Length: 79
Image 1 (cartoon, rainbow, N blue to C red):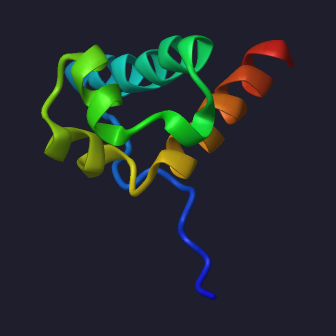
Image 2: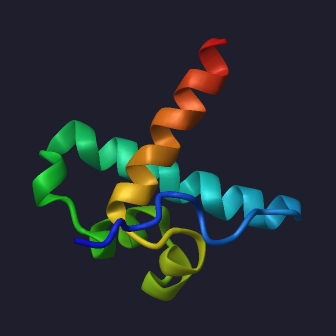
């Protein structure tokens, strides 16, 4: 079994990129409040974030990566 990467594919440099990345992470959290992780899809995350599906994959390789980054951001804000 291969380990799927959890790190983001792209690190936002410009403010526009940071806004896009944050929109994806916020969409994930909003959807997670409505349904279980297993029922969430990347397509739904893209729709709520108002970005193309390909844009989500430019930033994150998988749903698991989005979840890991949300957790990481939460811990950074606590500490």
